[in-house]
Image 1 (cartoon, rainbow, N blue to C red):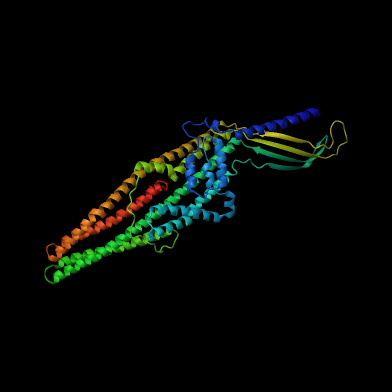
Image 2: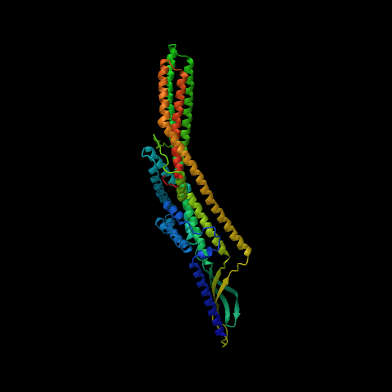
Length: 523
């Protein structure tokens, strides 16, 4: 009988070891085989070009997280390469130790990259330096960027533990009334157990978390580009307002000289008082326009400083000129670059790939979990000696438990949920591609229109209008042209000069939006 008991114990132990060995082997096997059982229309391979583009631009990424993702994703998809990310990521443990200081350093490094990008496209005058400083400050202080950095580090930290086994359990039971056995009284027992989930499921969960973290990094880069474009737009609006104000003031002085001529002619009887009144009314309109421009300037200045995290009334150096530069590529090339570099599209693709691994997690949810256990029973030596049993011998036991996923309806619903989530994420990618296709066509048309308009104003229309006004002013002084004609020429010139500054500002703003849409690539 004792030999039979020992045999059963050894057989149970050997069976448990075989189960552990089998589960470990499942974890090291490529997940590609199981992925083929899913929808063949969906690409299960992570887009590592997408991931590399994200990490090239987000320098706060955690090195331990990336290295773990490199290992896990390479195990899951053998034909892809994740090596290029490893050079760009910091240690997550360092982030935890340094806390907010690490986030500040990351923001400073990101601001340097953004400043370098701005210096490529802008002139070197003091106004451009001011713009670079504004964007640098905004990138350091923007709370939404800090929020995304924190979310990334939280997701990266999760990737370090999501594929680990649960903690083992240790138990101690003391019996109020001892269990009386032939070998003695059992007053307590000690137990140790370890739950082992399906290891392929843990691996798939870690891959999903890795891709979600990379999506957050891409979203961080998208927000940086948005802040960049927003500040450039506000800065160009200030330029337009300031130039229009200066133009209006210069034309007001010109109008005053025309009024003086009309007064002189009226004094000597060669003119009429109506000419003076018309000039005075037009001058009042210009003064009203100046007040409106001053109000718009204060509003835009306050908004620009608010985005940069500065006091609203802080002065901003505005350049005297903006570069008159047209885009050097066509809309089709712009669209291809946007598809390759736009962080918002990258983030959507990464989320789609993460939900693809979510389908694998759902598929493996119905696999059983195993629990290995060992127990030891403390037994008193309080029985008479007998050859039948070993009095006082402490018994022990090992065991194996397994969950029984019997509800097929439950697990089918879990898989359907994951599939619908993946389909929604995939459709988001398609929607963004269509959105950027239409946006780039519109921006390209706007840039071409603004460039041609500004060039035409600058080279042809305004010089001709100035020449016409000068000729008619001389003729008016000689009495050969009516005052109404001179006033109309003056109004035409004012409108054209305001339109020139507006077209230059529009071109700068459109170029900023194109820079944003193309993912920060210089075109």
